Amino acid sequence: MAQLFFAYFPIVLLIYLMTKKNSMPSYRALPLSALVVYVGMLVVFSRDPNQVHAAVLDGLLVAWTPILIIAGAIFLFRTMESTGALGVIRTWLNSISDNPVAQLMIVGWAFQFLIEGASGFGTPAALAGPVLVGLGFPAVRVAIFCLILNSVPVSFGAVGTPTWFGLSAVSLTDLELAQVGMKSAWLNAIAAIFVVVAALAFVVERRDIRKNFIFILLSVLCCVVPYVAIATVSYEFPALLGGGIGLVLTIMLAKMGVGLSCEHPPAEGGREQVKTAALVKATFPLWGTVLLLIITRIPQLGIKSLLVAKLPALSISLGSLGDLSVSAALVVSLSNIFNTTEVWSHSFLYVPSIIPFGVIALVTLWLYRQGSVRGVFVETVDQMRRPIIALLGALVFVNLMMMGGEQSAVALIGSNLAGLTGSNWQFFGAFLGALGSFFSGSATISNLTFGGIQDSIAVDLGLNRTTILALQSAGGAMGNMVCINNIVAVASVLALGDKEGYILKRTVIAMLVYGVVVGIAGIALFG
Image (cartoon, rainbow, N blue to C red; front, side):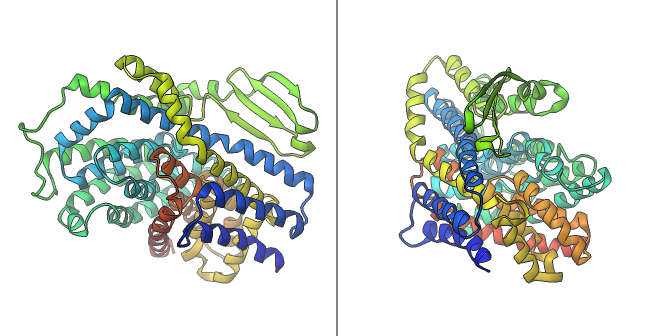
């Protein structure tokens, strides 16, 4: 009982600290919560101190993955600002339509959908957010909007990684895995229209949503129809191809004014137009990033295997700290941390920081011959000071909560929730997946952590395995919008200071709506 109480306590404490009236900023709340978990692991759970300290060190090292991704995204955004590329994009989007709903759907929905399919790692909001702020939308509302919409495609983000890799620990046949992918696509697609409307309500007036609802619905369908169709034959490309098709169609619909309020007519010759050459150049940071992500993510192209090659080119023993190795592809690993089985690894050329963000930013500066690398770098470092502390605390918190396998604090919470809901688990299953994403910042890790637990629950309760695992996958996707890592990331890119708690209180509303819709849809379609 004491362990179960303590499993819940750090989560409740963290949420309270970040959402109370005079909320504590994440760079203080997260390290404090991590300290509470650290003490609890030693005192309440009686964990091996060596194992606890190995988990702490591993968390501090793993934190540099989101830190470097965020820094890369900020560096690219600052580059777009300093070169004037962002201004050209703003003018072009206004030439398509000055209807705010159209702009939000193009950038925040369809464009994010495409980026998630190519990369994941919180990249979509980091790219779409600054573009929308540049169009004049309030930064805090943009952060909430982008976080909420970076959910539907997540089950197939980074070329399907949450599905084919995230569920790899569960014994599934190829046919069963395909069924999980197909079912999760249907669940996410059904939730999409509710989620999009909920997200828009944070940025525009409800009357604007009503007047432009036909366009909103068509834009959603432009992404989710190919998304579901592709999911019937592949669990790698639904988000990538669905987003690409949806983006092109959404732009065409906006250009023609289909379903848009007449208060904001389609672009006419009188508006300032952007020449094609100038547009291609200005959007290079965006399409160049997408292109480089696709090239480096699709295994069939052969580049990915080169970037993640782990064969050590250099190995050094650091004593009890562990064994350090570096491959020719700059994959840095630390194994046997404090003589435990804890292993950390970071692929410098594969994780989207240097490639594509750093490379594309430097090429952009060269193309425009204006703006300085040093100036952009200094601005990036200054903006990253507090997020670094927050993310270090977040990953230590996560690692400690997840240590212990089936006896971890997170697993205890999952088992307790399943016991409380009993045969109604099919309605609540997605929320366990969301809990995993809230902790880890990754739908893939959520699936790895809870996939086996969800499978066991399905067997014990006599529920359909692929349906429960599809709910887990959809839950991992919806949890993206409340994940602390993602909230800190988008707040950092948009320079929002200490607004993380404010954002969390809003995105959790949309997540609850998502979960209810998915639960009902799961029972109605696959019950």
